[in-house]
Image (tube, rainbow, N blue to C red):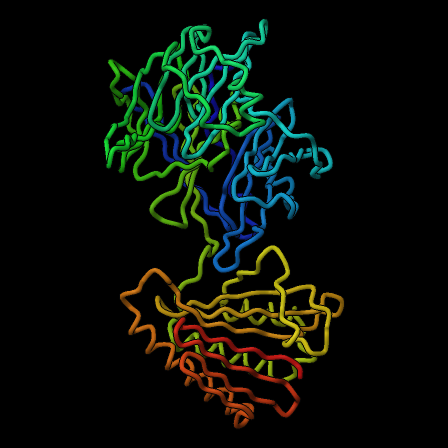
Length: 527
């Protein structure tokens, strides 16, 4: 394994912007007395998604972005951006079948692989044809040298295990360690996780595995809890943990220091760690972490659960990702020798809707109603997209076609495409709209509006929210009556009200309110 660990991407990311607008770059360099140098760049980008994974391969950079899902669950749209010589080379959609909450994105056997956590199937990325291919399942190898294969598994609440498999004898040795980052100096192995650094001078001194706890059997049977063994064969260099007893149970509680990563420089093991407010390079002395140099403030580093092969394989493809207090700013960090490179990205793209206020929100509703009622049978989806963009609506279209009930599609039109938008009125109420269409002729067949609470976690505002929804239903009834006349049907129950209109061009309008849930729904379709 190389001593030089790559932890961040240093290329002109302003090409990541999907627009042709000029991007600006600010650079700052600080040389410290400690011998380290800090290089900080800021790029202004426009990315309609959130960075989740990143790696370097053959001097190209592969960045995985994910669509933020604000309302609909299920599949999330993902893209891979490929960069070469500081320029965007390709943007590739990830197939829908690769949708998963947890992914591992890594290089193995000179190939780029994406592995959904719960799926035994793997996906190989063809870097020549920019295409995905299914391949056989991968093992959980996280490190390899001339003497050992090292495997690791994450068992969630059951912790994790790491196996050293002797290449000559096939005998496996086990330590209770959850998917660590592994560094090696001479013949000594160092295992780093969030709160511990373990030192193994000779893996043959670890517990020898019985057949039922070798990696292959545990991976096959999933019996994570079957055996833990004695803590032998290693030294704890550092542990930022407290043990507490609650109701007869023992809990391990991490403290305020998180070890982000470790790396080897000048044959010494150094670390990147963070507190609640700052990030440092440090060394370990007498089981204590000693800061050498402060390199950042208010950075929140992250790595997705069950994404751990990328920490170690190839030794130079781990990229440290971080968020900041500003949701529109994120970044990457890398250490090369004694140089620290920090790349900040200020994102112009709106990742979540901003409150528009009641007046603006009501105006958008009236514009939508006019557009739909004018002649729904001739309304094309492309015109809807253009109008919603002009009104400043927030696109929340999921990565699949939303279904519609047969009662709202009495003419049995083919519904095989849809678009969804969100208007956040304020902290109490938001309005979404779904347009259901036929792809072959781009015609909109039905439209569904919904008004819901903006934040379902604010129960103390229930009275104010209820008043807000009462005013909204009255406003909607008045608007529709002005366009379609008096309702042909009106029904009121304890927790439910419904009114129905028929327009002069035979469009049916159904307005429903569920009082108990502060929910309003408006459906418009051809009768």
